[in-house]
Length: 593
Ligand SMILES: [Fe+2]
Image (cartoon, rainbow, N blue to C red; front, side):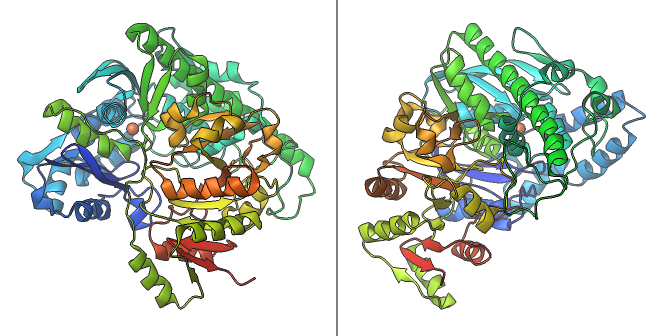
């Protein structure tokens, strides 16, 4: 049984292929097209999935789309009609774009893949999210929470899964949406919607949540976990370009200018910005206000998510939880779930955003529609393309670059540890690339976490990011508790996928300063030998050399670009940055110093 799941035409387009219930390949389209957040039909990702399985589109039993376009279109039209005449523009835009492609998804799939229409099925947006987490979780029975901007109508659902059954018991409907509320503040704080949400989360620890009461004027949280937005403050329901309105600005003041650098008295002024401005103090104070707003919206979001989780626990009596939807990528909120609610075990789909809907749609049909028993647990995120050592060798030889090949794995790892130990920044390209937005040791940039200056060095050499973007630690799962406050770390699946923010243990922040955020937390990745043997071996060896089995890990890309896919992408990134060494499989390329 071969089932292809597809998501596209909204945020991140993606494809995922199940063969007899096991995931064979999955990727977002942006990794191949090199267009960040590419939402077009995922031709290249589909071709990659088919090639990996060694099949053609004609061999597919089903193709499943991750949402119901007609229901979504109905929501857009209904909403537009309710707020006429303010909405005439959104109505016109919707008619144009939806009538071109989105409504006729079935025809697009038939034309692109040559699959007969009776083999093309549709799931529902939040059902796809729910299936993408529960059906590949290790749990036989669990509560399910999905939270995002919006699907067809739902913006959040609360449900339960048992075996191959998923029941979504309750939903919150558009326009009441935690994801859209967070996006409104993302825009207000000067960041791009659907891209800058991480920045808001990273900025929050520089602030104090002193405006929680104001944010609470925008959203009412009920005791049963549901919530209502006060639509007097928003215009996303009748505008395709603006999320908040004048009344919102009366409450929070003018939005932060996107061209400003972010810094506060607490963060200091990074050396890689332009020379320190004359009005440094004034700008630091202005930014401090926005950091306080970020802290406030982050806290209200956490409170909303925790309210839903507690309510789910009360209703289901279950202490296992599966989560997906874009808001499930809020790793600070996730960290609070495991610390502060009765949930004992949590699973979060690593591609929790709409890309992951492709996998969920395929899993939904395989198990819930066709009734096949479950057998697949997503223990790692390495579902992308890999390149053989032969292909890498050909590439390196064609470039004519001086390099060293290490046929012995110990010698390779020793060489990389030597680079890290010397304070060098290393591009690490190994095996299949990751599914979802996090780099987890297949396409990563690595450095020594013990050196406080590494944050600044990596930012100067490669990332050029604001100081509020923390760098993450990859740590041996068994050694994690020495550094991080996450008891019994190996048990926690979200830690495998870098989806928990936890406290760095007292005293350890001076041991691993480069991966400790300003508030003493870290977004750890617990690395397991069984799933990532080479990466585990590297960290283990670094630990033997230094006493600290942790490396600093950030995604292998330049600012604004998708994470690298091919050796050529990696090499181009290496050349255009100040990275010191590039490890492609067992080849090490060093920059002449
Ligand atoms: Fe979604």
